[in-house]
Length: 586
Image (cartoon, rainbow, N blue to C red; front, side):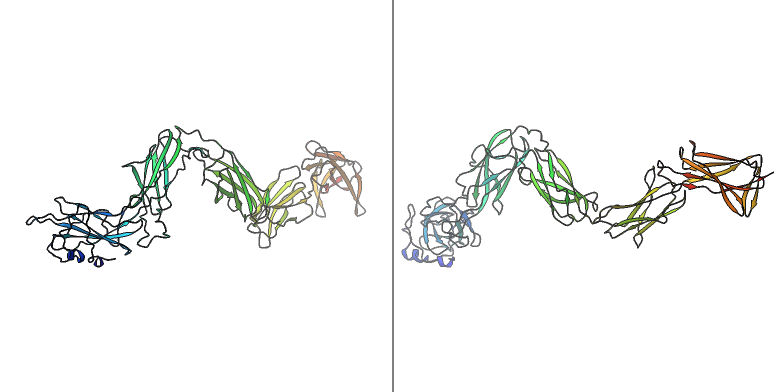
């Protein structure tokens, strides 16, 4: 209802202590006549005078009073001793009620005017005032608006993460003198009974304005306060002394209503905290898992309980991430358990390192566990260019690598019999998957091709063994000259001398056997004269044979030695030396 609608039809009221008999009945009925020269009452600023768009708030007791009181400044008499009256007209904005009140002018700056208009919780009211000099009224003041909130806010809820309430599980995480934060929350400022939602002129609530609090006593007049945000939340950060304390908190709405009972949060502040315990961290993982399939790592931290919101950090290392890649943090339950789900995309060893950073009662701890993630088999082969080799000959070794994912490198190793394995070649295979290298074997040698594996293919090796012949070195001694027959070098001996064939076998074959063979040339052919039995090689792997030449004038001969390996020598094959030629002269 607007201002114009309330300028007429005022009800003449006889109020206790108010002088209204001097108002003519006709004038009181229609608020006429109006004398613009009369000064209007003054409206002191206060809780009862807001605008139509922004009413102020006031509270009322329960049960609500039968009327309302507002303050105005009635003009003081200045001419011929005239005494002015202040007249107030008030109405319920929903149109249900209206009433009037007046008061005689007094030599004071502000007077209270009682209007018999009952105030209801949640309703919005308007009022304005005029001055009456006994014959006419002033122009009315601009209307004032206010709303009524007679409902107390709900009791707040108090929480604190550092000091659990008395009688609840958990232990303090801070000690005396350390700052801590208490959180206050109130779900709502209740609407009047029968209202489903705020909005109508008779369904209003002022809303939570602030919280008042006191430590170890209920908050009273002038209590400390913290503001409430739009969601009804507030907080207090403070440091406390040692001992058992109770924090009392009340909620206060904009109209000034206080929650009926304060919230009481009782807790204990220790003088100092015990040293943090060192928990153990156990991880449980499958030994193997399929690549691309989900696996679960579960864990348990000892020394429970743990506070809500705690997490463990997870770092996974694999072939693609040797220094590790962070996985999402895993929430930690109060009993110290947690679970980590992962779908590994890289085969091979996947190592999960879990770290708990620690808190005020627990030290930091970490642990690791490894899961072998499946990889496909890689095809690797190796071949040599000959089935066996002379001592020190050059062997060509070729390794082949089949299909892989992102690794195309092979390594080739040689391990001679009785020796150490050595790398003789490494590199990226060619477009045909081949890698070749050379080696000079001096004894039986095993060649191995090795693929280290990649993200999706497992390591693989292949090996082949190539025998090698021993080396038989020979030389003649005791001759006095040389000649050539048919392009061959012949040593010349005197018939009184003895031909001596010196033999060295490489590698050292001390204790093994050599045989000597002698052939003589006649009838246009070489004929074996004798083959000796085994002669043992010396510690320096040498031996010799001699031949008497007394009856051999003008004859041609040749000698050679054969290394004959026994079952004790599996490093080299038996080997003939080259023929050594000589002739005998008078």
